[in-house]
Length: 278
View 1 (tube, rainbow, N blue to C red):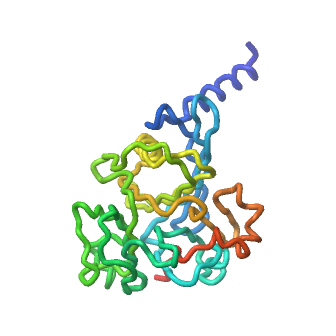
View 2: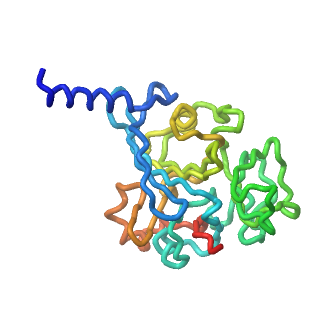
């Protein structure tokens, strides 16, 4: 065996070793290669493999809340590209579920103002951010388990929040969703064990919610808690910085210029991520 062939064999073996195990029915994912796209912002795109075949891809942005602020917006439905243009936020992604009239199914807190029902028993988790007065005792962004932490909007110490369901993983590592055959495009927001917020968006309709929970639990993303947001055509992530642009799902990228004309892609609520000015 020549040195060159041996080197190629070693590289190939290392790549296979680096395909990391995940929990969902033998699914694996390619190595995490993070790209810095802003202060406290990193991005990666991984392939999910089943039996050695690519079954889906994930666009993942990791956000450090110490350097970036979150704001929840609710209003007239429009394309996510229009939201980004209006807000000038480097990162915009869809919020939670809403009714046919555009009203939220669960509690939403936007700049301290509560919207939607104060209680919906179906809601299992709540993403919250930006504590009032930036209290050092509270995380700047986290996920609440609504089964263990009931929420009173009048007493909520955070100024931004979105309730959703299901809670895929709780802080004890327990999967909180029953298995189902229903599959769809997904957007999931999660916390990792270092206090970062991660936003996942899938490239296709591969994952059921239970599969996604299993996958995240066994992945190398170091997930602490994960909350499902709205799915289907509403599951969208748009990143636009000075030097980087990404729209997920990528299969819709060619249609991005036409999203304004296709109401099925419009969103009445989004979460924007902004660099802190401090």
